[in-house]
Image 1: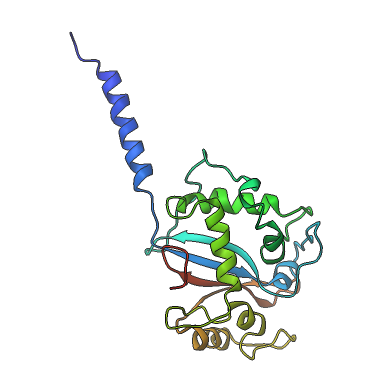
Image 2: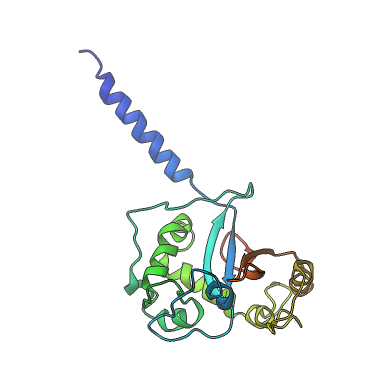
Length: 216
């Protein structure tokens, strides 16, 4: 009997795709936090979530798996969509720490769905949905320093910039980086955007987090 080359080819392709999916990984996370004023103070504007105006504090944008070469995986598992019931015990905290500012106004669910589908599914072998969102919340809320942790009062120093106040004054990118580096011991990555008048402003801060989504 002649071998069915068409079937064998399809089987080989399927195996290769399976291996490719299985080999998808990442090297570390970025914890990305955004300043709500800089999101809103642009030509596109913003919409507050239906739960109310967010606090004047950095909010979580996401916990993003990344590769050491600067690239990143995305949308890794369409078979594992966001399930709000899996994080029902976290939603009240997420509404405070992880609000959506996109228009139209929403209850934040679409934002969390996007973050899980695009980024969270790429670390699901390490952090399931609940653990993924819990890790991001814990990293933001962590307010202690120990020899096992360099995440020193994240919310506090980001809100105050370690003496750099959100007072309408001008601060150099270097001074902002140095303030954060003095607190954490390593240099963050800073993203700026432009306000409605075209002036540059601090928008997001990226902090490196280890493979397991912890600070240790």
